[in-house]
Length: 431
Image 1 (cartoon, helix red, strand yellow):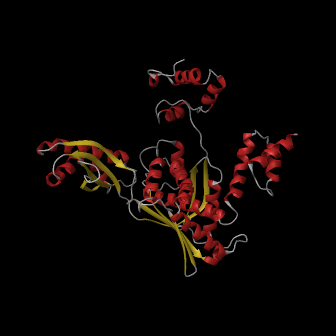
Image 2 (tube, one colour; image 1 turned 45 degrees about the vertical axis):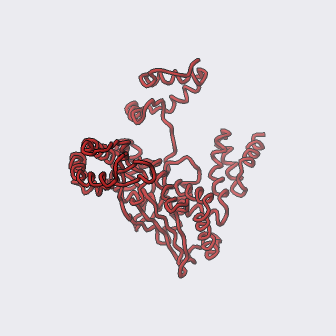
């Protein structure tokens, strides 16, 4: 049977599922039931989810959890997190509780500029292009007024527009490089609309040039090195003691662990992945684009020519300080923020923050996650806590009963959790 299909998007949802089942799933009714059992029984709510993307066949669930006790600049938050990985929410909660009694998290938004570019080629002399741009720049900005007027009323809009010569890197290549302030919106649609209008004016006016100008594309950038937030924690070294941990030894090892991630890319990638466990979980829960955030953050980690740690730690004059500075382009209006019921709920739980407040909350989640991971790595090791959280996943994999779960969880309170040890315990219990 051919797997090519024509007009798939025009099929009804049930017809799409029937085609998938017969073509890829051997007509298996159990597979079809798996797809349909994740439909929401509320038809209106299901239709809302169906319309988020194209060719929807079902819903894909991820857990929505919360991490309480975050003291951020004196306000207590419970942070919603959407993630599939065990121990992430637990680690964040543990870090929040640890720092709540040690002054909490301090944050500040450093800047909020976002960037977009019109990419084009020009075959003539740069001096001619530069003079042309200076002449038409007022027209470019004026032609975009119908798009920017509402944003400007709220205090945002286009901050600057410059011509960038990239001819040395790529023959005949130039940019219109624009910076924007989009306030509480992430701003992708606003920025892209402005850029496309810039491109239209540029093309219309290009007839005045004697050499050829061609617009290649107009698009925002997810690299936002001037949309920055900082989060930090700090306390006396002796206050780091906890459950038998020697405070000075812990501080020394912790700082060294961060310094290793600064100079060793193999470690830095895993180090930063742990930070993104916390960041992505909150970004996803609040209906923001975690892929854009990921791309921008990792680019920022490489901004000095080498991939390095996003976090920093030091001990000076007996004071331990741990902090993060990273770019986060987030929104609390537009997109899914008012459309997805659980996104709206997550923002309600956070007190309906504006974009700057959400930047600070998300940065704290990343810092807390990194603190929790490094604390485990430099003391008990990462697997002890992670595998205890993973224990329930293993038990569910073997369809353990409630009674079996109770017995095995009790057993591993005093034993090391490994996959093989849990399997042995289940088999012995059942035999």
